[in-house]
Image 1 (cartoon, one colour):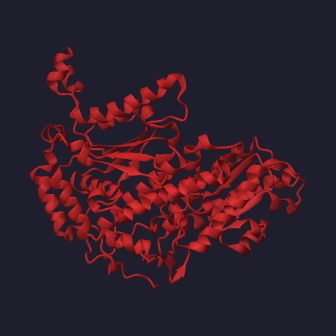
Image 2: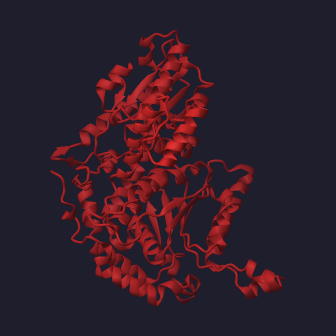
Image 3: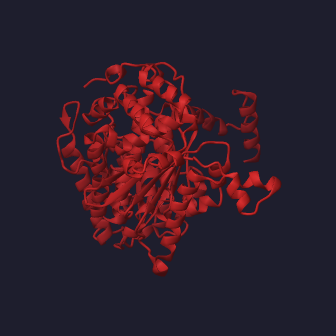
Length: 557
């Protein structure tokens, strides 16, 4: 299929053109801005059951999504569903799953969902079934990861690999870092390390305590030309050769490539048999399901990696087959639009009550903000409304003692997602820690909803000018996500949930969530300035500030 007309999936330029948008604005003006969740609970004894949805994964495990503490009632939810219908979210969804070129600015399919097609059903791009190719790469990953983990694959001296260093940036780093941290419980006896920052400190500190004889490097760059990644890769190669007698023949036993550029991979010294490719329909922030996940497969074992894929595949099935009213990711995306565009919320907090998920918010930052940080719609006009939330977060119990003050008593509305697993992988002290963790998970969401009024504050003994300082307005929205346990399948499902939340937002706003032109300008200018830094003369080709900073840097360097 050729490039899709951006209006193939939508017949509107701006979301504000849709009748349901105007309807939602009227609802907000009439009642939305004053809607009290406490009062809604008092009016409807069935509210929790109505607004909580339970997702059942492929392995029978479950995740509950409780939307009941959000600033909505039936009228709001019905209007949001109507908005999804008018924006043709399902049309864009179906086009994506059909392999159409919905990334129209780059003339590409958006087909990361094909990477977790473990049912091996036909999935076509430009008339070609990509399922066999995807499966072949996965089989290659299985064989390679099994060999490395078992010790069959050895370094050049015959020693077993003990450490894997993944060198990448952006999606080639954030995904594997987050997943290996989240699934650390499932790891074996191989440690993984990640280098992304071009700051030499990152690779220097990573290599400092490693043994070259037992270290395997994975160079993650689709084109094998990404400046930051290749610079770090060359530094790793220099270190390796210095440690191993400067014999380039040894490189083949210690370096593998996650790339499609066979020529550059071979030039680097990597045996092209140890090259793992992926297609241009895999966006960087959606690539952890692809060969980019090789570090994950080595770390947790291929069977667990396969379960990770299947967990996401189960959400794909839910998203494509479930009616809108019960479609969990779609509801999450619609709520985000409700807060962003009608309540004026600029941020979104994701707070996992799980130490293993401590990098999850950082991963979601790229997923959300690189996808939906756009100001031009598919209709090629500038959006007249807010798009893309500023997403942030940290493990929750730490966060409670830092920025939760702003969430509770600040002047900003900050919709929040709280994530907890009922079962801990480390139930120490007779589950004492887990019970304390859970008590905070439940209490924070409740406190944000109910608040504390002046009468309560006074009844607790506060007087005079102290009273207003202890008042909590409440009515601050939260979505509680309660999983049974953070398993590979659960994590795959959670990531896919947020992928489709992001997808739904972009579909409503009528923007292309799958390009990232905003990343490019800085890269272009950096190349120019990089050459200027090698020039000893003063620079005068930029604005006065940039010239001054460059020249000062050069004098101090």
